[in-house]
Amino acid sequence: MAVASSTIAIGENERAGSAAATWHPIQLLVLSLCFLINALDGMDVLIMSYVAPALAREWNLNPSTLGIVFSAGLAGMMVGSIIVAPLADRLGRRRMILASMGTMTVAMILTGLAESVLQLVAARFVVGIGIGTVLASMAALTAEYAPARHRALAVSLLQAGYPLGAVATGFACVWSIPMFGWQATLIGAGLLSAVAFPLIYALLPESLEFLLRSHRTGTLERVNRINRRLGRPLMTSLPARSETTITSFSFKTLLSAENRAATLFAWGGIFCSFMVLYFVISWIPKLAVEAGLEQSKAIIAGALYNIGAFCGTFLIGILSVRFQLQRLIACFLITAAVTLVIFGSVALPLFALLAVAFLMGASVQGGFNGYYPLVTLLYPSEVRSTGLGWAIGIGRTGAIFGPLLGGWLLSYGTPLPILFGIFAVPLLIAAVCALSVRKRSQP
Image (cartoon, rainbow, N blue to C red; front, side):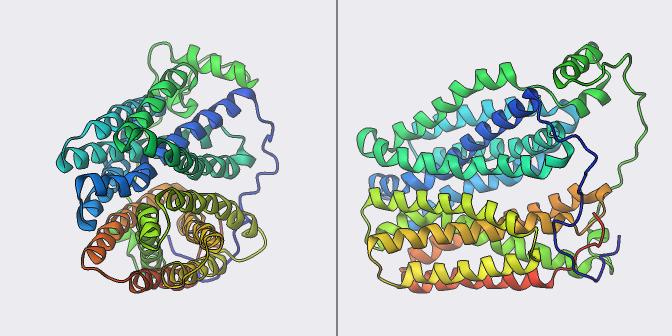
């Protein structure tokens, strides 16, 4: 599992020219439903940052306590992705998606009904478990249903639902928080998921890959119903059970002499990127208020950040076809560090401040998302998802640490220029890590 010393540009591999590129209605349906679920995830994650100013004012919470509330959801996401999500391989993608949606719906409503910080933290932790679980299941289901040539595109479109959901939530919060209050806004978010649940239950199919290895009663009929909708030949019998041995991809393998440098650089870059990313998305509306904006305009700044995140994610994917991905990631993250310092240090008119928020979202999120395809080329295909899973798991600790550090620094009255300067440093470290990663020469 050695990592090749030569560096290649993403976009030169996995061109499945012979694979079918036609999208059938069921494939578009799966992508659309998962896009909807991911948009709801974006709403559930980011809504706390939008309600944070009103919550802090009404409950008289200091920044340190708010940081705990933010990090509770992120801790739950880490638990969901590492511990709960693997159950989808045994119980099925559809079943885990539905279970996660039900969990998120109930927990979101309980978040709005919370009467103490402890109850709020507990509810946000459960919301995070649901989100962490459903993300892994949706990505697998979408990739399995998409035409082979368009799998990367399909997963990218799926991920785009997240910032769009966050954007829509931001604009909705501008209206709903002054009108109904932050508690009713959180309850309303839970009710939106409740409305979507019957639609997902009725229309979302199970993974063909899971069905073909499940060998349960009625599986052949279910598989052929899906094959018929896909225009594929019907099966007369299920494939024989295989005795595949799954090899554990341990720390020893990750840190072997062949892989050690690339693995550590990837972990370091993802950790630093996660730390800054979740600091920004958790705190930007409240920090915009402290920078002098009205609450409604601060929420708009948060929404514009997420519009930038949507644009940056697609931009780095398009550019990676022609340019080396490591250098693109570094350029995006260096730009992000500069915009972070400008946002916290320079007094700007409203339009310019909102433009900086947009650019911050494009550069932070674009650079961060560039790490995913970079990591997928570090390891052979047989263990690629395992290697990526370890990298994301390590990175999630940064996602928890970022908001906590931000809350701690704010509680001690750290000036905004120093605060944003501190968080610009991890972005520069992540840029150096990206330039230092060397990828395999084969897909």
